[in-house]
Image (cartoon, rainbow, N blue to C red):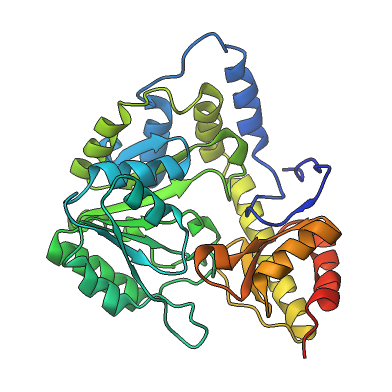
Length: 345
């Protein structure tokens, strides 16, 4: 695997992109598929579904493939659970859950984050809220904090979904970056609880431009997603389907990207600490960096220094910048600029 080609323009440290690029096998498959631009993609997504089922060790009727996990967030809001009841999610997280719930007029209840940094999921309160909700959304590892639920809290939430019958959707977009043995929904699929895991090829697999993600979960819930997906049957293009299948066959490229990300994450957090700057522990390919005024820092970094980062205040978590673990030179430049813009006192 080679490093992805450098892009001109601002330093892109705002979208959690993979700086190591996609698998060469995936790129070759996408190029071959795009030669048939006059042919519609397979609306049933049969090839990536079969490949994912084999890769994950689940049945094909437990998988739905879509145009990124964003489409799946909308489909779950449209099709799953009691649509007469509001959904529940945490505050200070990816806003797509709330936006989709409000767009389909279900409404949304947000459970405040907790803990010493205000960045932890309150599993007990969330579990209680599931009893009165039509559907629940969690992000694990969490976006934008990078936090990972421990086994006790994760199992508590799964048990609450099983007890209440409320579908629990866990966005696991960054799961590939988490340490081995970390809690994941795949561990609980055999329990029969109403569970859906959302995954993506945009992050660890480096296919962000092609837009392909998938849901894996209980077969009856997946069937409802596929039914709702009939309104947009060709949403996953030919190149994306082919590249996803090829990516799954190239485990070495994925493993290298994950290992390099872990090394860069440790280095970046150590550099932050050496400069007296606080950051949150992360199990992802980004780090939440504490600054006094995150909105101002995001704006000034872009306007004056051509460095793009994400103000976590956009997610409801002000006081932090979400910084993607991009090229080392860009991160070093960011560190120096932050010392100028937001000196540690």
